[in-house]
Image (cartoon, rainbow, N blue to C red; front, side, top):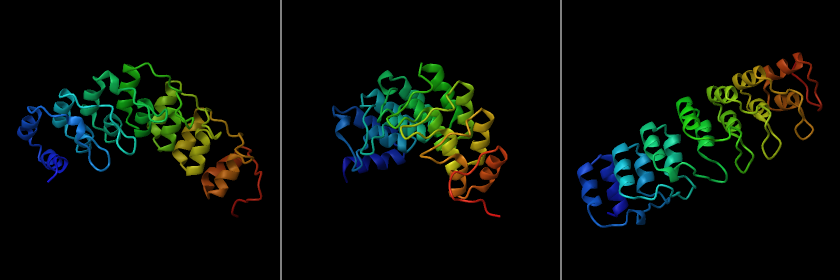
Length: 235
């Protein structure tokens, strides 16, 4: 059995005595990676084991290590809503500014949709609420993309730019229409999203009909939006 397999076995069993015995040896914890590039900390987070995570962090594991998918321990903890582990990792200042193609911790918590996490990150750190990743996605666009209505509304209340566009020229209202996400669409409308923008020559009504989102299409018709393509509403 390899060390990694043994570690996972003891991790699942929460064998704290075994881990203590390993940490008492003079070994380099950073040398151990599984086939996906996960180090011992990422594995501990994956199994949501706070005790293992804490001990490994205190032993000097590289907390900024990323696996083969570019995921670090903190981002994984956010995805899994492991609040105690997140707080643990946030104490390590060099962990908070993970940056995967411009995608940082505020983007991650917005995509996750956990309001408690968003509030915590915005309270602790002075992030620009409209900060963009390499694709031009702001935290709001991430919340909309992942269908996190509560997160989107919180970000809007905190001053997120509802009309910000990504690198391809798409904004939050476009994403909601293309997904047929009525709750998100009506939320964005209530916060003043523009309904008249064009996207590669098409408007929101064209897009709604093309994707068969007829409830949204009917709303747009009532608001005076006219088709720019040959598509038609079903009779």
